[in-house]
Length: 166
View 1 (cartoon, helix red, strand yellow):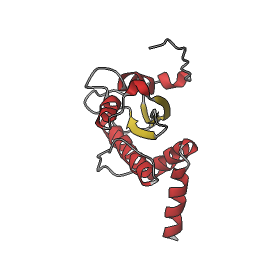
View 2 (cartoon, helix red, strand yellow):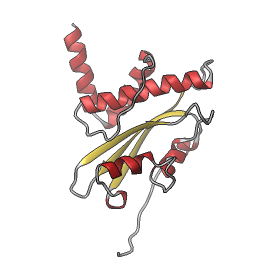
View 3 (tube, helix red, strand yellow):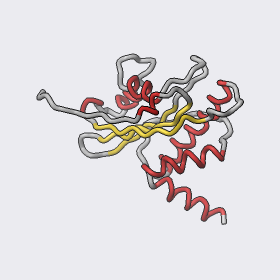
Protein backbone atom coordinates (compact mmCIF):
# COMPACT_ATOMS: atom_id res chain seq x y z
CA UNK A 1 0.00 0.00 0.00
CA UNK A 2 1.34 3.40 -0.94
CA UNK A 3 1.46 6.22 1.57
CA UNK A 4 -0.83 9.15 0.91
CA UNK A 5 -1.65 12.52 2.42
CA UNK A 6 -5.13 13.30 3.83
CA UNK A 7 -6.91 16.21 5.46
CA UNK A 8 -9.82 16.22 7.85
CA UNK A 9 -11.57 19.53 8.44
CA UNK A 10 -14.11 20.17 11.19
CA UNK A 11 -15.54 23.05 13.15
CA UNK A 12 -14.81 23.13 16.87
CA UNK A 13 -18.51 23.27 17.74
CA UNK A 14 -18.78 19.53 16.99
CA UNK A 15 -16.70 18.94 20.12
CA UNK A 16 -19.65 20.07 22.29
CA UNK A 17 -21.47 17.35 24.17
CA UNK A 18 -25.20 17.25 23.75
CA UNK A 19 -28.02 15.76 21.72
CA UNK A 20 -27.14 15.78 18.03
CA UNK A 21 -28.46 14.05 14.91
CA UNK A 22 -26.02 12.97 12.23
CA UNK A 23 -25.75 11.28 8.86
CA UNK A 24 -22.72 9.47 7.51
CA UNK A 25 -22.47 9.71 3.73
CA UNK A 26 -20.42 6.77 2.45
CA UNK A 27 -18.99 6.66 -1.07
CA UNK A 28 -18.06 3.12 -2.08
CA UNK A 29 -15.20 2.29 -4.46
CA UNK A 30 -17.73 1.83 -7.28
CA UNK A 31 -19.12 5.37 -6.65
CA UNK A 32 -22.31 4.21 -4.94
CA UNK A 33 -23.53 6.34 -2.01
CA UNK A 34 -24.87 4.74 1.14
CA UNK A 35 -25.94 6.45 4.37
CA UNK A 36 -26.05 5.78 8.08
CA UNK A 37 -28.30 7.85 10.38
CA UNK A 38 -27.51 8.26 14.06
CA UNK A 39 -27.71 10.40 17.17
CA UNK A 40 -25.78 11.19 20.30
CA UNK A 41 -27.20 10.47 23.73
CA UNK A 42 -28.50 7.28 25.25
CA UNK A 43 -30.35 6.34 28.40
CA UNK A 44 -27.89 3.70 29.59
CA UNK A 45 -24.95 6.07 30.03
CA UNK A 46 -26.97 9.05 31.19
CA UNK A 47 -24.73 11.40 29.20
CA UNK A 48 -24.35 12.68 25.68
CA UNK A 49 -21.12 12.58 23.78
CA UNK A 50 -20.14 15.02 21.08
CA UNK A 51 -20.62 14.18 17.40
CA UNK A 52 -16.83 14.17 17.14
CA UNK A 53 -16.65 11.45 19.78
CA UNK A 54 -19.23 9.35 17.89
CA UNK A 55 -17.41 10.09 14.64
CA UNK A 56 -14.20 8.61 15.97
CA UNK A 57 -15.80 5.54 17.55
CA UNK A 58 -18.13 4.52 14.73
CA UNK A 59 -15.33 3.01 12.69
CA UNK A 60 -13.19 1.71 15.57
CA UNK A 61 -12.63 -1.81 16.82
CA UNK A 62 -14.87 -1.63 19.94
CA UNK A 63 -17.96 -3.72 19.12
CA UNK A 64 -20.05 -1.70 21.60
CA UNK A 65 -19.37 1.57 19.77
CA UNK A 66 -18.73 0.79 16.11
CA UNK A 67 -22.27 0.54 14.76
CA UNK A 68 -21.34 2.06 11.40
CA UNK A 69 -18.54 -0.48 10.86
CA UNK A 70 -20.93 -3.34 11.75
CA UNK A 71 -23.62 -2.09 9.34
CA UNK A 72 -21.06 -1.67 6.59
CA UNK A 73 -19.89 -5.25 7.20
CA UNK A 74 -23.46 -6.53 6.79
CA UNK A 75 -23.43 -4.88 3.34
CA UNK A 76 -19.95 -6.18 2.46
CA UNK A 77 -18.46 -2.69 2.55
CA UNK A 78 -14.89 -2.34 3.73
CA UNK A 79 -14.52 1.04 5.50
CA UNK A 80 -10.87 1.34 4.50
CA UNK A 81 -11.88 1.36 0.82
CA UNK A 82 -14.63 4.00 1.13
CA UNK A 83 -14.77 7.78 1.40
CA UNK A 84 -16.86 9.49 4.07
CA UNK A 85 -18.68 12.74 4.68
CA UNK A 86 -20.22 13.43 8.10
CA UNK A 87 -23.24 15.75 8.49
CA UNK A 88 -24.47 16.74 11.96
CA UNK A 89 -27.08 19.06 13.46
CA UNK A 90 -27.21 20.18 17.07
CA UNK A 91 -26.88 20.43 19.90
CA UNK A 92 -30.62 20.10 20.39
CA UNK A 93 -32.76 20.58 23.51
CA UNK A 94 -30.13 22.70 25.27
CA UNK A 95 -32.70 25.05 26.82
CA UNK A 96 -35.24 22.37 27.61
CA UNK A 97 -36.53 21.32 31.03
CA UNK A 98 -36.98 17.66 30.08
CA UNK A 99 -35.04 14.94 31.89
CA UNK A 100 -32.15 13.20 30.16
CA UNK A 101 -34.31 10.13 29.44
CA UNK A 102 -37.12 12.27 28.01
CA UNK A 103 -34.64 14.08 25.78
CA UNK A 104 -33.32 10.71 24.60
CA UNK A 105 -36.86 9.78 23.55
CA UNK A 106 -37.31 13.04 21.63
CA UNK A 107 -33.99 12.59 19.80
CA UNK A 108 -34.69 8.91 19.09
CA UNK A 109 -37.97 9.87 17.38
CA UNK A 110 -36.12 12.49 15.31
CA UNK A 111 -33.46 9.93 14.36
CA UNK A 112 -36.15 7.48 13.22
CA UNK A 113 -37.96 10.13 11.21
CA UNK A 114 -34.72 11.19 9.52
CA UNK A 115 -33.72 7.61 8.66
CA UNK A 116 -37.22 6.74 7.42
CA UNK A 117 -37.51 9.96 5.40
CA UNK A 118 -34.12 9.48 3.77
CA UNK A 119 -34.99 5.89 2.83
CA UNK A 120 -38.40 6.96 1.50
CA UNK A 121 -36.74 9.73 -0.54
CA UNK A 122 -34.54 7.14 -2.22
CA UNK A 123 -31.31 7.35 -0.24
CA UNK A 124 -29.68 3.97 0.44
CA UNK A 125 -29.80 3.99 4.26
CA UNK A 126 -27.83 1.10 5.77
CA UNK A 127 -29.57 1.12 9.16
CA UNK A 128 -33.16 1.07 10.31
CA UNK A 129 -34.06 2.96 13.46
CA UNK A 130 -36.67 1.43 15.75
CA UNK A 131 -38.52 3.91 17.93
CA UNK A 132 -42.16 4.32 18.88
CA UNK A 133 -41.88 7.63 20.70
CA UNK A 134 -43.97 10.56 19.42
CA UNK A 135 -42.28 12.97 17.03
CA UNK A 136 -41.72 16.58 18.07
CA UNK A 137 -42.90 18.21 14.84
CA UNK A 138 -41.30 21.57 15.55
CA UNK A 139 -37.85 20.03 16.08
CA UNK A 140 -38.38 17.67 13.14
CA UNK A 141 -39.06 20.60 10.83
CA UNK A 142 -35.81 22.26 11.95
CA UNK A 143 -33.81 19.06 11.51
CA UNK A 144 -35.37 18.19 8.16
CA UNK A 145 -34.63 21.68 6.87
CA UNK A 146 -30.98 21.44 7.93
CA UNK A 147 -30.40 17.97 6.52
CA UNK A 148 -32.23 18.86 3.28
CA UNK A 149 -29.36 21.26 2.55
CA UNK A 150 -27.12 18.23 2.06
CA UNK A 151 -29.85 15.82 0.95
CA UNK A 152 -32.21 17.73 -1.36
CA UNK A 153 -34.54 14.77 -1.99
CA UNK A 154 -35.81 15.35 1.57
CA UNK A 155 -37.25 18.69 0.41
CA UNK A 156 -38.94 17.05 -2.57
CA UNK A 157 -40.37 14.32 -0.35
CA UNK A 158 -41.71 16.91 2.09
CA UNK A 159 -43.20 19.07 -0.69
CA UNK A 160 -44.85 16.02 -2.25
CA UNK A 161 -46.37 15.12 1.14
CA UNK A 162 -47.72 18.66 1.55
CA UNK A 163 -49.22 18.50 -1.94
CA UNK A 164 -51.09 15.30 -1.11
CA UNK A 165 -52.51 16.85 2.08
CA UNK A 166 -54.05 19.80 0.20
